[in-house]
Length: 454
Ligand code: GLN
Image (cartoon, rainbow, N blue to C red; front, top):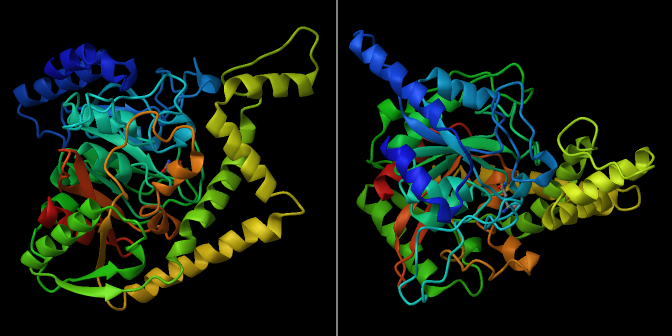
């Protein structure tokens, strides 16, 4: 009841696209019944969570924050959300996001931007971005509208919003969580993960979300470890790598200071800190902004006015005109930009120069990480190159927006587990995040380091 009331009162944040209090109440009642009957409670019995509106939920509108899918009510449940319901959780509602998860500030949503509950000390009460694309999730958790939420991360969409709002979030190894029923953006990068107030809650959520699913061909056939049972803040015997290439030019002093704080904290927890190099990391951002739009242009071809959601059928129009009218009206500017970039880099004349080249760079980046694991067990970096920026500050400049992903994109290209944990406040009193990146499948080490830092 407390969460449902808070959600209803916090409309100004615009965190939810749809509220589903009955879903949350049903889970709470079932937990009460089980407790009264003396049954063993499920791991998330009665816990009310928020669901990023990129996960298909049976009978509940699923929009990906796009006009294209407004009114789309799936007849099936995504694997990840089904697993959460099976673990006893209930849904408070569907959370706002950047349209089709494309963005870093939540400003590309058709349903309007989310507002961060945070304010800078000298900011004159200027509204701040909650990060993106999982900005509804981050704002809702930071404002205590829900204790945890789902996110998805293609190039940083769990970690950067977590950093901007002072919460924790983990993108597991690619393949840990099923992509079935999650609206696709860039299929070779998309990965679901939890966002919550702290590392322990993330571990509990991830246990419920992860696991093999025959319906996703890239799902890993592995048992789900009981991460939450093996959490330990000791980093004795662990080597933590600091990437010299991440000391990017013009990095704000406060981000440098944050990083140094993180280094001190992991040393205090018993880790040895070593410098490592990822020589190709400077090409990660351009490679990502070729590969992700390329895959998006292909994935979004399905929105043709016939199979899903919106149909714009002008009087007397033929099929081509219906496609054109539907896609012109249904997609937002950023989505159209990515479809055009993606179509261009996949076109016959430019495929080798852009897509093939970016794919090669991606392989080199993955190899860089493999070499780094010879020297260390984990990597520690800032999550983002700045604290939360003001709404509107970067929305007219796509390149400035893309640059915000500079620290999160390399591990996405390599499919590695990576987490953002709160790393203290800057001079303006705004939260900053530290990122821990781990070896493939070593979520445990990532979570443990997160626990040591938070
Ligand atoms: N900000 C990045 C982008 O716009 C990442 C988005 C995401 O991870 N979904 O592509």
